[in-house]
Length: 159
Image: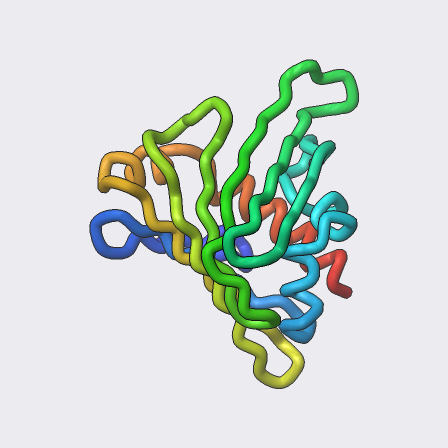
């Protein structure tokens, strides 16, 4: 397990990474911040990156598309998309994820569960990769730092 500030990152089973973070906000607000393009553009991505394109068709079978850009003058974009398999507001999302320029083999399935208690919401995302090798490739990157930065931005937005 890695603990980056308020984010916990755990390898689980042969193919999974589990991300856990608590937010001081009701789960409905957290769910909205995870699914509404106007809110996603305000937090999604690590420092130095901006979400320049965000399209969400929030329904089972609906697709989403994100494009990030690094820095104001950057010419390099990073694109990613997927399909929602389950949408159960305000507590559960299941979607696929595939990058335009893959940095790990195959597709990832992400199951996000939001549990609220006393006005605080615990966010748990289970990332399931096609193989142990794909999962381990992701774990060898600075994933936890970029995700932690993005979730810190989300926490600020939710205040």
